[in-house]
Length: 170
Image (tube, rainbow, N blue to C red):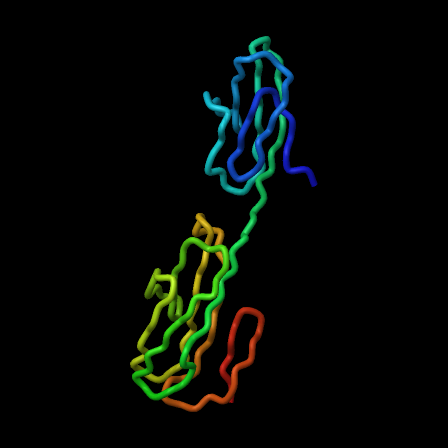
C-alpha cells in the first residue's frame, strides 16, 4: 500500500510523508477537509482519512485522500517484585515498555503513579489488578499490560502468562 500521493509543490503531513510534485504554478492554496490553510505543513493529525485539495495560481486543482494509519509502536510491559509476601507488602514495579513516552499505573482501575518505574504498598490482603498504560505521544493510542496479583499474605504457587495478564495460581 502506498503511503504518499503526488500533489503540486511541497506538501508535508507530519505523521506521514512529504508529498512532492513539480507540477503546477505557485503560489498554492492547500485545504484539509475543506478548511484552507496558508501553510503546506499539516501537523498533529489523528489517525484518519483526510481529503487534501491543492489549487495552483492558474486554478488547477489536485484532490487526494491521505490516510494516516493508527500505528502503535509502543508496547506496555512490566514485572512486579516480589509477587507474594506478608502484608503490608511493598511491591516494586519495573517498567519494561518499549517505544513509549508516557505512562500511567493503575490498581483496580485507579491511577496511582505516572513514573517510569514505581512501587506500591499493599496494606490489605485481597486480589488486585495492576495495569501499566504506555503510550507514544498520544495517550489515547496506548498499549496496556495488566497483571492480576495474588493476595498479599498468602502463598500463591506459580505464575502463568495468559495473553497480557499474569495470573497467580495455587
